[in-house]
Image 1 (cartoon, one colour):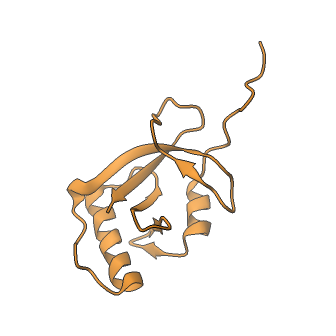
Image 2: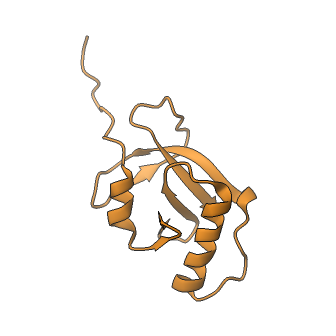
Length: 110
């Protein structure tokens, strides 16, 4: 059996998110992408808890809360690592729990 030419990178861990986020609200590391399109954290978090943490983040970091986050807008997904820390690029496009190297994330799309 031959080795895969592009083996998956190791999944990111909760510790990677803790060290990379810089912001923790309600005990959750909160990460926002560069464009402000997505806010996410590691694991599958209760939607009400994550929505409240995103609202806390918006109030403290952005200084506003024009559009509160609703638990219905919280999605449980899976992602894979595209580049390891410190850059730790990841993607959840087409990723499932069965995808090699997949890890759980909770996401809000703005």
